[in-house]
Image (tube, rainbow, N blue to C red):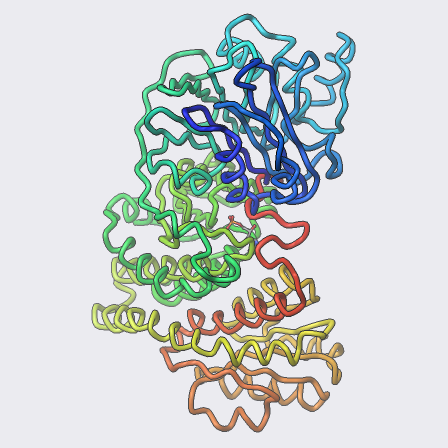
Length: 603
Ligand code: AGP
């Protein structure tokens, strides 16, 4: 939820920390802070501010803070409201240690009581402050020893970065349950919650695992397990470009990411095809039931995937909210496999649900965007989406890439299980290869979709309707609109309307209906008629050349023709654009909507 960064090296630390924090801001943005070790005095100097990184940046203008080692933090409040006191870094009582933390310390009240009894004074309501005081309290003269002692005391999830005035050249990081990467370079090294934060300085990363500690100096990175045994870990080379983590001329990351979708589809197809899937098919060979678990947008991709896997591979699939699945009485046999879908690979609900199922004997597969993320390492097999970094809080290009992976997985499973013929497989693959250019065509409608958004921007509520494979797209359309515009929206299977929600329809209610020319076309037309009869406003997403739909709709967005099974790749795009334009016309912060974080690492 929060973002952490740390630097030790030859440069001034503050600009590096600030740049990193701007990149991490999507993870949390109610307050921020930095701490460095002053070059001349070796004292810890910290600055914090409530608000966004730019507010912290402004506060730092003109301040003389010089040092080549420091830590920074962008916060998404869990314990204590956004305030300067609660912002990180937290400093120990005698100002000897500074700490940034992402995660939750579950036993902090107990630790706080212990420390208070020893005379430590707390100035924040956070769980993190205990870590700073613990470092001071347990300090042995050796930073690694102290870190181990602190880690032994902490329960919960954390990624921690620490600097100390006693060791002005050393940055220490501990990971248990929250993401943390080490960026490795010449004469400088970094810690960060994710790769894009330091991508402009290095493409070489070490992915820290749980219960590992990194000790960083300017010229070296040493890794240890919690028993202080030295570890050797491989360097992961990342091929993301710096520009892929920048706006490249677009107004917002979300807009850029919507427009990157044709490329994301092509890259994900290529990535899937180049992967050795022997192990995957060994895992899936004899399974008779699949569960897909995920949250939010990733869950909606899973709902589409269910249609494809059941249709092409004839395997029954259940899709569940990860937060619900975790606490169910799970029915797991040696023929059960779980697919966890997550852009970040760090979503706590999804990770822990998958781990629990794995412990109960399920085979596990992850569909993930972030290379080396926790979910990918905790699963038996990982299928990556090749979307590149997604910075906007609202998922767009990663959704479409998740669809690609699910579609290809369903087809390959179908082929292996002989539930589809090679001819059908080739036919469907060929149709998929034409999707990127069809998405390009829809993106050309951007201007007219903006006009449409202008017409409906002042509405209080929206309904999104779809049938069959486009029903999850209605759910996703509604989620996109509510999370970035704060307009209330509901997604419904169109046939379910008459069982209740139709009571909501009046002349003020816009209804976005997926009415493409597939085998449900006539049925959705009837559903649209039902809305029309109650004076609702209809915005149809329809197939090009469909004249009939015009009679029934107030507005129509035409998309290219494709196979029935492939429409979700196309119908989602106008929905993303409608939401994006309504939100920006309303002046909302689409990349960092209120109350949300890109990666939700708490349950
Ligand atoms: C998407 O627009 C949302 N911000 C959110 O629902 C997101 O999809 C969800 O939190 C899951 O994230 P993940 O894919 O990283 O696991």
